[in-house]
Length: 592
Ligand code: AMP
Figure (cartoon, helix red, strand yellow):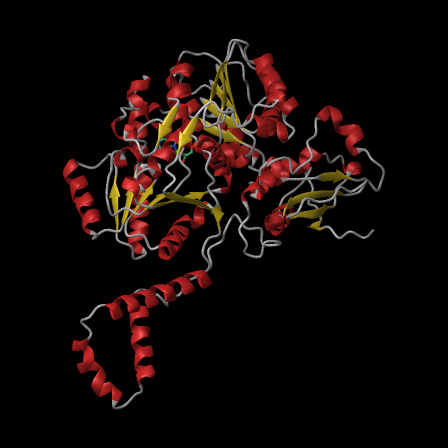
């Protein structure tokens, strides 16, 4: 597909096969059905048939594109019948504890009907529990490299039966200093294995790993812009914007944004049927008139829902991509992406539900911080800016509600059927003056619209509280700073001269929005930058790139972390051990 226009109807008629067309076995299809996945994402469509042939693969894909299922489903499909072997058939290496848990949970769910035994192993969890799980029999190990090495060294993890290795988020693993560990782990696996490498970026170091450890790998890129190779056209009548919000606050953020935007009717896209059902329930609970539309519904149910949307009985329609294909509703003013869609094409299709026939439309995207890279891809490919907005504050909401009340009253004044209310006004005028009566009436209108309810602020993940004081970040400076090279990169080979500086190293200027922490362990204690990155990433869920710069002095170290998470990091580090020791951690005070 070279070019696509959102205003064209190509998307409506386009036939896209489901998972069954990819040759997946029934046990996997049933699991996907239970999870509410209606069709493969682009990366799944491309990758699954290739991996089923047993070939090696290098895939460039960002988080959120559905890459976990893209490698896990073929892995499960090719898993031989193996009754309770303690030697895994597959090994997935991931950079962080969070990802180990996430990937192993997803793999377990996909492989439930195949009784796949999936064991996550990562630092921070008692090793005894992991030993037990490994001894009990395991098919797939999802591990962070450090902990995998620990187990290999102890002799508790044998990789001699491994047939598939997946390196997930390989660039992130390298950034965290795991290059040597990965090499050592791969050396323990049979040379006949299938090797799959996924990475959001493909710097030369990744190419080097691929050249050394993969055999004639196939290469795929999904959602990655390659010069001017392809352009998607987003309808210019559509006002686009995005909000950055953590998962826990998404439903609240959606409500707040809708309250300010006041759509006549909005279509809210979710990834899965389950998400559609849950969000519909949540939004109904919050007082919106929301309906669900997904592939699991009968035609009759769907017709009823569409009728309610067209007549205005429902104001929100929660839908999956499949269910909303071809949907054409005149009253629709807003499209909301509850998640960043897994492919830029899907984004263009979705927002094309509004702004039809020359009308204006609004497209709103809720992005979790980790999904910002995908949003960047969409902007690049559509050559349109999607500005990041600040989630409306309580004050913004109040101001908007007053505006709406005022609008309603103006509309009422414009109508010429006010005389009949004289009968209410006249007797009141005997006791009150006109202004008092007007204010009381305004108050009634205002409260009847739902204004005045107790509201709290919704945390905005695009705002750095230390500097911006509520100002949204402009695009180029959107948290990517933390993700892109905030930490000084290091290689084990470089480490000695780089970090063995004199007592008082030259301190680099700290990137804005970064807090410097003092950690009471230094070179004397054998601490290395990777120990700090590793521990912080594991106890807080920060990514490797969000941590740094790091300086190791003789008796202490300093480490930069995003200011907004500084207190959380301090607390988490105090509650854990670094190099097996409790350590003194606090904000760094420069005494020079
Ligand atoms: P990942 O990129 O693997 O982290 O996946 C991102 C999210 O998309 C996860 O919440 C998955 O459960 C979800 N997901 C993956 N594949 C599909 C699919 N084919 N349909 C709907 N949701 C999916």
